[in-house]
Image 1 (tube, rainbow, N blue to C red):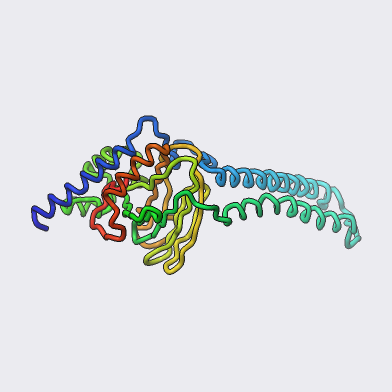
Image 2 (image 1 turned 90 degrees about the vertical axis):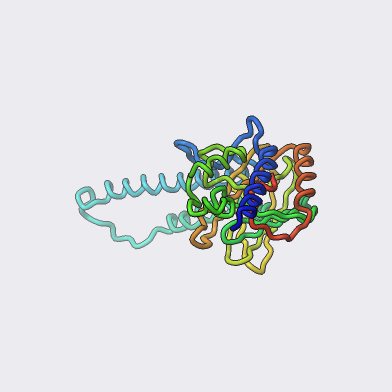
Length: 306
């Protein structure tokens, strides 16, 4: 690569990072979805779908816990009451009608109790509402391409530290926590411990709006997932699937490709930045200005959409 071309690549990267910094580097922005010490249970829910999933999971957990405790107690009782020492003369009956009716009806009642909340949640997930904003997410090996369908622009989203985000001289240090990568993280508004989670471009959406994600892939099967939103959808080449969510609070949400898609699968994070409507309009105007030529492929996409 010539000196001029190298300088141009680095300039594009720095320009993109400065654009991203204006959106990402907001004081007090909550990070949701990153590992925390002694973390347990689900991520804090950021949508109604996620809250409903947690409720259904907890409801079923109570049921299976009760069953497990009952079976354990019953097993201990049988071991103690009907062992050879306590019961030297075994019974000769072959069945008990009341017991057989009981252990048939009780599971049926339990299953009937589980059906309404489960189906309600399933239909809520699968019935796609009218979108306020439609975004097409295309999985590639190994990065995401996002197209804001209504606004006719798109951008690529790479993990910071991916070879596409590094100058040629640093490419052999890809996927490593080098000084250059740490500087890029800081410039884009991320913390050092968000390496492997941070992308050079985040999906930016306004809080309280219905977002419909159209998910597909260009090569192999990928999967677009944000646990805090309660959404996960495989992207299959040649098919267009959909999911929806409505973020309830501002923050920076982390996700990950959740379908094994090749050697760099673990370096394919997802970031979604939820901002106020006013901030979104400002970002959207800048994004349209820079990326109105939808479909143009770019070699470097450093923080270009933040």
